[in-house]
Amino acid sequence: MTPRSGTPAQFAALRQFLIESNYTEEAICDRLDIPSLSKIVHLRQGGPRADALEWLIRAFLLEETMPAEWLPAESVELLRTLGLVEGEAAVTGTVKLYPVQGIYVVSDRDLSGGNREEHVFSAISPQTEDFLRMMPRTKCPSLLEVCSGAGAAAMLSARDCAVQAFAFDVSERCRLFAEFSRRLNGLANVTARRGDMYALAGRQTFDRILAHPPYVPSLRNTQLFRDGGADGEFLTRRVVEGLPAHLHPGGRLYLIAMLAEYGGDSIPGRIRRWLREAGREFDVLVVLRGAQDAGGFLFENCAPEDLAGWRQLLEQRRIRRFRQVHVIVERHRLEASAITLVREAGEGYAVGDGERALATAQRLQDDEWLRSRRPRLAVGISCASHAELRDGSWTAARRVIECAAPFRVSGEFAAEAVELLSRCDGSRTVEELGNVECIRELLAAGLLEAE
Image (cartoon, rainbow, N blue to C red):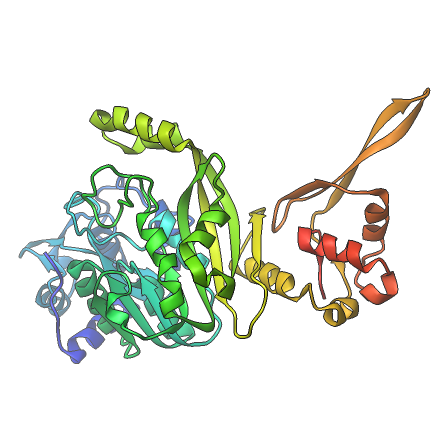
């Protein structure tokens, strides 16, 4: 069942009811004693008759059947009219309805219809929460979310930073749900449409593209919200391949995905290949995050009858493991050398850290800019000296510098680099510190921050 379209007055009344019921993330987490909505589990059943907040939690998040008499009759009738509940004396939600960072989103219920091909995936899953956390919130004229699902990213962007936002998904069910949520939130600057990837865009270009495509490897694509082809990269590849035609100069793609690590074929190399001959127009940042052994991942996620096929695929393609990645791809405004930057996420990594790393890499070839910077040590940096016994005395043989946040960095450096780092406290410019090339190398490695 899908929610039904209503009048502007009905949507406004529902929005007001949810607000007056204190149906917010903070209130829900406090009531259930959980840190975030993604931690909800369907174990809590029943409870004392309480307030409207309790009713909404139990009907739309815990997916219980609730007595209609707990709410005012006009509120229950409004929910029925909009197709959000069914039943008379005992009422059952037909969808999940929940707050996400101050907006309201509808998606399919977890406990029913989970195998439906066009299942609308929850925006309060751990994966989607992570995607929304990694969204930029700086102003942009035109934004597109592809593989948009429930459309939460497009709607949050429309509220916070985008003059106009578009949500494209191949599923008509996703379009209907996103349009319902758009109207519920009163967002006139969001357009939800059904279409395959960029097909609806025509020749239009965007200043920002957001993507969290389905990426679970699947020998048989049966669930649109989950399956990403045999290697899990089919849709991710298409997202990147469409950038030359649809990303405006100066625009950026922000992508969360899972990509395979192949023997002899790096993740950044594949992304570059997907850009084809236009690759020289783009800078690419790949932030490596969590890793999962390929065999273990597929064993947990595939059907038993497919195990033999998966083993053959892993051997043929030499897939060792899968990596969660955060990718930023920026199109040059002016002619410039293409930059490829790879980082490993450390403690507290956020989208701003990636943007700053890419911006620094883009400026490092500008000697005038570099010489005027006041470099400072990255947070959490440490140095360990490893000595060897030579001619009866201990001699420093290796100096390993490490950093834990926001990126994990570890490498061997010469004594002069270690000494230079000790003087980088933000009080002197690169010109004053001297050894410009060594500082350039330390900035490129992520061990210094440019102020």
